Length: 296
Image (cartoon, rainbow, N blue to C red):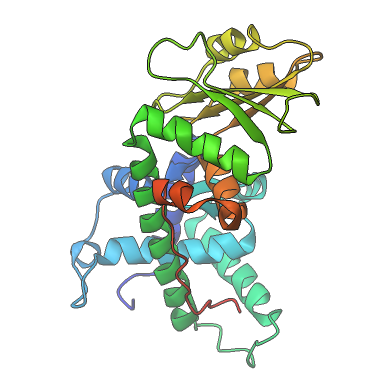
């Protein structure tokens, strides 16, 4: 990357941070790169592609973000990029693009030197290209996997998705008493108990939404209306929840309500995968793929 200076890389990084800071919930990496491209004018070098495939612009930005992640300025979670509070602070304190990027590199090098397998310090000009390349390969694989899983769930038949969550409850040790058949459900999709006879509290009431849009506070309030004081509510929504919806759930004093978005649903599915029945696993079949991690 001899044709890209640290000042130019710093300019791209700061433009990236600017758009991410304006998106408090972060942005998918693919979207962030697209929006960044629309905000800057690419040089011919940045527009060009590697012989092995892939644009230089994308790789330049991704390489630089590895430094920012290790500096604690940026978080990458299943393809979503989010600026941390520390990142926002440094972004405000270091307006010079080159100084901004050099500080990220410095912190990356300090992190690398602290690793158990660290080799003797490389010259300051070195950017640990091999280690970063491995990180980016893993990062892009995770992004692709998460995008495919997300699309799979969003395209699932609503009643199959409802059954998927009922299967998860069974794998977690709960006893599913009822799953709503097709048609109007009165705001309740699944009913479960901690014991097979339904004699032990709490009764678990579940509402499942496969919609893309985030559930707002009105949707949460509607579900709260079907919960009794001895009930526990689980609201599952692939599109997630708005901030006021989360606040409404947290601020309940009598009714207990847990909101489950696609990320938490996935984490629960993975955590309890070994307890799922074969039929349940076929609803969302997953296979672990192992990479040689650059971080050990």
